[in-house]
Image (cartoon, rainbow, N blue to C red):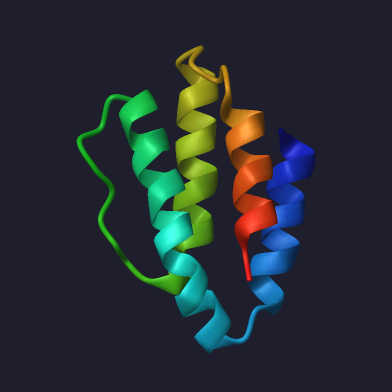
Length: 83
């Protein structure tokens, strides 16, 4: 899981702003899925600058709650779908 987060971080940080914006719908989908896993109704959309941090926090919270099943696959899918 850590490897996928590192890969996503590396990619996200190098995206030009227009491409990061284009990738936000897919990032939002992942954030919303992880919010459900952690028992949250949703996560506020704070834009491209904070999306990566939100992702890391939600992954950590899911792991801490023992609900990490399927998250590595979700992260790999997100990474592949980024522009």
